Image (tube, rainbow, N blue to C red; front, side, top):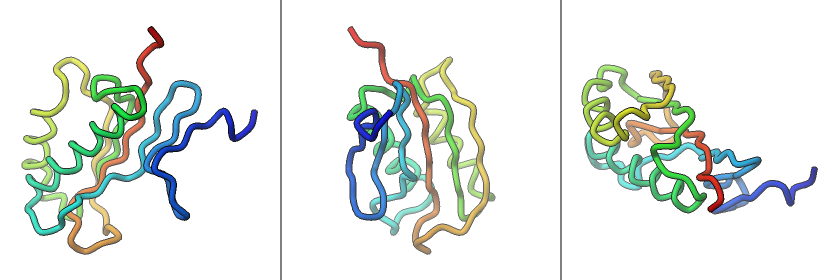
Amino acid sequence: MSDKDIQRVGVSARYSELAVFNGVVYLGGMVPERGDTDIRGQTEDVLQQVEHWLVQAGSDKSRILQAQIFLTDIGEIGVMNEVWDAWVVPGTAPPRATVQAALANPTYRIEIVVTAAQKPAA
């Protein structure tokens, strides 16, 4: 195997937005583009980004294999869950972990990491 087996998208010196290997999509931690909103707005923002990058990688939110959610205040899990539950495709809710954590930017209230399967080739 070589690096040619791995597709990387949105590559910078420090990280890539996503990588694909053997039909599995690995998203980097998605954080809000705007830090000046509440947990509802930040969750909606991050889930839109997740959806965007999954489509770029030939996948979609119904093919998520696992999600890891980091909240700066676990007390906000109820509101975050309302947004999540409305976003997830019924019957495809992935295995998920949600923990409280300090995030890199103090304005971030949420960060989400997702692993998903690509869609089968037509």
